[in-house]
Length: 303
View (tube, rainbow, N blue to C red):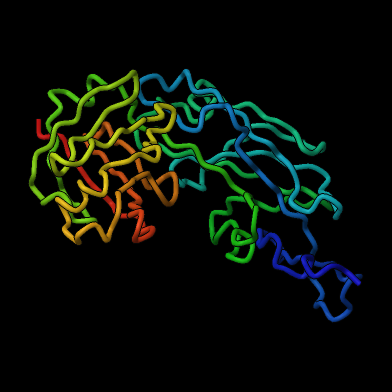
């Protein structure tokens, strides 16, 4: 009996036929016209550029792995790795064709993307990369002009990655970004900072800065920025002792000490040099009261 995973809706690539996850020979009740396709698996290779910096887009260099999601299932004749820019599916460009060995690594560069689309890469541009599936003399398009590339049952599979994206982001240059170091609190879901409060943000390293604490008894937040993608992290740090927490929150020592770190998805904490903004998804832990969850702190440069 075919494994249950092969009864999932695998590809939902739209072309001349509807794509299913099983073959007629595997299931005699399948209606005619349904064709089995394996599922392309496109992944970014660690250690290469995760994003394109608008300060020097031509310096962008990355690699993707082109593979099949179901290793032991039927394979296409070949895959064509293709890219669209800013969602324009009327202008699909080929990165590399006739890929028939899996996994294969394919290099992407800023110069390549510039040449393929014939225009300079600017902040906000987004490139989506997937694979056309070629088998039985037919090509199943990953970016059809009408309809979606994949159904929800495909993208929701654990580990599935049929498409990857690279965006052009504002380059982070810490001195330019911080300026005079005065940032206004836009919102604080935890509630320590009042909206409109101006706090000092101070450079502490090549890509590191501190955010002034909400109370003199608490330590400043120490933040590290990854300039490759503008993500920001706070390593777990003690903000205040039990005595400090009691002086700020009360409770007679019932809360214990207060620690903080960035929590949730990596993409939830970042700097945005284009808009002069800092967003930190901060997870607070009270030593005697447990993990309090993650709360967004949003700051914007005053000048």
